[in-house]
Structures are given as C-alpha cells and as structure tokens.
Amino acid sequence: MKKLCFLFCMLFFYANGYAQINQVYSSQNRKAIANYEEGLRNYQLRDFAKAQQNLQDAIKIDPAFTEAYYLLAGVYAQKKDSDKMIETLQLAVQSSPGDPMPYFKLAMELMDLGRYSEALQNFNKIQPKDKPLFSPKEQEQIAYGKKQAADAIRIMKSPIPFSPVNMGAAINTQYDDYHPAITVDDNLFIFTSNIPVNAKMMQEDIFYSMRYDTGEWSSRRVFPAPITTHNNEGASSISADGRTMVFTMCNAPGGLGSCDIYISYYALGQWTMPRNVGAPVNTKYWDSQPSLSADGRTLYFVSNRPGGKGKKDIWVSHNIAENQWSEPQNLGASINTANDEEAPFIHADGKTLFFSSDGHLGLGKKDIMITQRNADGTWKTPVNAGYPLNSKDDEGLLIVNAQGTKGYFASNREGGMGGLDVYEFAISQGMFAIVPSPVTYVTGVVFNAKEPAKRLPAQVDLHDVATNELLFSSNADHNGIFIVPFEEDRNYALTVNFSGYLFYSAQVNLTTNRAQIKVPLQPIEVGSAVVLNNVFFDTDSYELKPESQAELFTIIDFMKANPSLSFEIGGHTDNTGLKQNNSTLSNNRAKAVYNFLVEHGIAATRLTYKGYADTRPVAPNDSDENKAKNRRTELKITKK
Image (cartoon, rainbow, N blue to C red; front, side, top):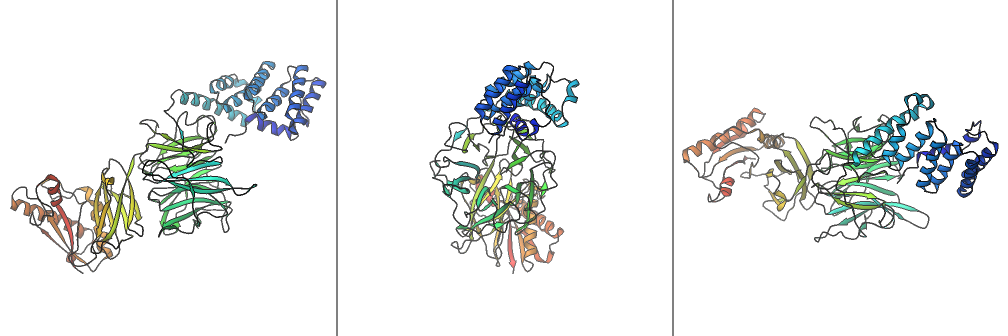
C-alpha cells in the first residue's frame, strides 16, 4: 500500500501538457530540447525504454539540462529502480550549482525511501534566502520535511523489540487478508478478505477462525448469511463477549452514503439481520472503519464528513438507547490533523486508542500512533508506535489483545502468502510509550435459583467500587451466559438483574476468571435474600466505606423499580470476640445501610434492620475464608 512518489506526481502534472505550454527550459540547446520533448511524449505513452534513451541523449548534449534529469528520474521511478532515480537527482544537484530546487526534489524522494539522514542533509542545503523561489505549499513541505526527517531519525535510534509472525494458512491466502479483530478471551478471530467472485470481480467478505485448545487456529470460514451478502462487507469490530459486531458495507441498497456502518447481534445461535446504524452516525459521506468498545456501547469510526479537522477524521458516538446513537463528536485537534487519520482501534480497557495517521510526525506516509484518554475525557498527545513496526511505507490497522500481550496487523511484506497477510507479534513490557491496561474477564451463567435449568438473559453491570463508575453493561445470552471484561489491579462490583427476580451481587478481581461464576437469581417472593458482597466496613467499624456506594445505589434502583416490596437488612458476624459486642456491631452495620437508603429516598416504612451476630453462619467458623463468608450484610424480602 505504498503511495506514489513525490516526483511521479510532479511528472504526471508535466505529462498532461504543462511542460510543453510556454515552458522555459534550463537548456537553450534546441537539439537537447527536442530530445527532451520526444522523451516526454514517450513518457506519456508509457514507453519508458524510449523515453529513457531520449532523456539520456538530451543530458549528453546538455549536462546542465535540469528538467531532463527530473523526467529521467521519473522514468526510473516508473521502472521501480530507486537507486537510479536517486542517482539521477543527485546528478541534477551537481549540474545546477546554486539552484535549491534539485535539493528539494532529492530530499523529498529520499524521505519517500526512508533515507532520512540524507533527506535532512539535502533539506538543510536550502537556505532562508531561497524561500521566494518556492511556492507556499513547497515551503510548507520543506519545513515539515525537516521536522519529519529529524523525528524519524530519533525514532529509529531506539527500535522496539518487534518480531512479526505470519498467522499462516488458517488465516491468510494468496489474496488480501486484513483488518483483524479479536474477542476478550482470545478465542474468536475475525478479519476481512478480498477474494475473487469470478474471473473479473473481487469482493470483500468477513471471515472468522476459532482457537483450538492447543492454541492453533481453525481453518477460516466466511461468516454465514445474513452477514455475508453479494455486497462488500469488511472492516469489522466485535464486542468483548462476541455478541455485537459492527462492520462496513459499501454501496448497499438503502445506504445513506458510499459506505455505511452496520450492526448485527448474536442471539439464539445466529446473527441477526445487519441493520444500518443510521443517522447521525452514517451520512451521505464516507463512514467506515468502526471500532467498538468492549461493552458495545461506544463506537469509534472514520468519516470524511464536513466539520472535521482534515480529510478523514476519527469520530466517536455513544449508544444512548436501543437502536439510537448520539451525535458523533470529533476526537479533536490532539488526534485529528489536516491530513488523514484512519483505522482506529479502541482497546478493551476503553481508554487506549491505536490509529493510523499521515498527519503526525513519524517515519513518513501513514504511521501507527497511540493515545490514551485522560480521566477528564481529554486525550494524551499521540506517540509513534515505534520502529520497525512503523516504516517508510503505510502502516494500517493494529489491534492488541485484551491482556496487552499480543498485537495483530496486516502487511504485504516479503515472505508472505500473497497480497496483505495478517501477522501477530508478542508485546513485551515497555515496548510502547503508552501502554494499554491489561484486561481480563469473568464468565458466568445466570439461572433461576429454584429451577436451575431455567436460564435467564439478565442484565449484567460492572461498577468500579472506588468511583462508582459504570464500566460495563450488557445482557447474558439466551443460555444465561455472559462475559464481562475488566481491567486488572482494580476492584469491581458485579450486579445481575432480571425482571421478577432479586438482584445478585458479587466481587470481581484479577483471579475471578479462573472459574465460571454461577449466578442463581432468587425469584421475588417473601424470604428471598441476597448477600450484599459489595457493602464494606472496616474491622470493628459500622461506618460505611465509600466503596459501598455502587452497591447501595443498585439497591436503591431495585427498590424504586419494585415499590410494593418491603425488606429487612440483616447484619452478620463471625464468632470471633464477645457475642454482645458482635450483636451490637452487626446491628449497627445493618442500621448504617438502613440510614443510607432512607437518606436517599427509600421510605422508612418499607425497611427494617436487625443484627444477628454469629447466630446464622453460612459456613463453619473454622478458617479465615469461611469466617469472611459469615461477616456479611444481607437484604431479605419481607413483604410482597
């Protein structure tokens, strides 16, 4: 995916007539000019062999014929002979002492080839007094080229450990395979392939592969209908639980623009009919390359709509109701530039963003950049992902698994299976200047506590107990199964709700994903009780800790949704210490919860509280672990 070189673009301009209309040449030799113009005609006819000979003859007649050197360098560019191209431009420099233009053209081509030190040397040959000889655009290119060359040199002096491995025939083919996505458990891999439909037509489709227990990937399969159609589908992204997928479909019937973003859900064992996300996300312009947050509620995408900072910008929208997305917001000038920002990937931590840009300083063309959202919602200044991950060529979509241990990207580098291939690489500690937070996950199954075979598609919420921030909200599937991602080294409150049932409460931490959580929901009836696992007190204290608020507000929401119910709040201790002290402590803890609920709008007539000390243990008081189970606060339905 290389860009056409700077010189070729300039020569294309000449070849469309400009060079022969009132052209003032650096040579006055008519024979040299005749050879040059014959060479230009042959260049236009793409007869590069004849053009090369014409131009070499012109230079032989007049070794100071600058335009002939430029066009001859363009011939070598067409023949993909970069060494000859640079050699010819160097001769142009030598043949025109005092003329700064050859330095400019040589520097630009050296930048394109990744020869940054040489490029900077030639840029520096251009003196301030030469500025009037260049157009305003060329002056900008010189100033930016100097900065970019210096930055590229700096980046290459500190290479990152990078050893990409081709993912092999299970994923890659002789055609283009690209735009990877992966679920939080690393077990479902999704990517786009551009495959032949017939002898004359190629089509983009979305493929998937499943990881075997051995760690190998299953042979690729195309997504079945209704995901796959006769249109082009690609650039997909999937939620952490693998049950919400967004992707791009171009020129589809009923679309709003040339390319639109579509969404589909996995339910009852199959994917739903893809639905156009619609306005305001999709417009009459180009809207593509979606990246979905882990919980499926935030959508990053690329658009060339008006109101951006440049050509293609990254935008963000939030799911505010069923089938409804907020007005997209531009990510702003810290991320978007006057050029192209593309291929966003939001990590499972919900704050680290990888994207591709040719507007930020780097190694030239499009580089992969990394930024991170601050607590106040602003974004850190993007940093380059590093060399040799980034190179002189275009680098596109990079994704990183939830744990932050492995990256995936597409490349047409030598040694592949053909076209673009998907590669993987290990991410070592400190590899990137901005590091995504490791994310693990918990799996669970929700069922009726009195009829365990009855599975429940309950709502599952994850709160940060320190901030009360809702980090994840989703629903279990029709089998009651859910997957919840969460960032390592933080404490969380997991709550599960389903209409007609008492809510469930659990603590979540780094080790929780070792086994599936079983969530028995109690039907709403007198006597049903739930342990408030995220209500916290210090030892021998009945003062509620701030970390309890996520749980307490969940109780309040539940009580407001079920206004006919009354409850008892029960406090319990283990058998350590004097029974009278435990009775007083447990009663005061229950009263503390009671007071909080009343203070926040729950009628006191619906509530009672009682301390039970150690009289109702749920486990023998024979270990620290069991004693911890007995130290608890419970909520029990007393009236329906």
